[in-house]
Image (cartoon, rainbow, N blue to C red):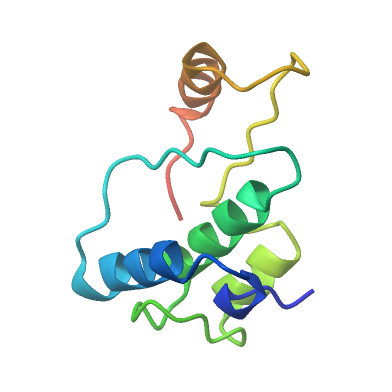
Length: 108
């Protein structure tokens, strides 16, 4: 399941911003992805996380490094997937609970 920014259609402005942020080392502390259901927010978040962890660190995804392979298998230890317990939306409290639960785990 090779996912990269080429899978994102019609959002060149957002993709370019994310790639540029990684390439220049100016990644914000948080990003809010808003849109209709099934509009690709989850895919964009997964690809952005993968690009952040890719060993190339130039905004593109090599797809061949260990980190990319782990991200494709959803086993990259520094990418944490938060799933809301409520079906409506993911809130700040949901994120906070996950961060507090994972705070004792050191990054790889």
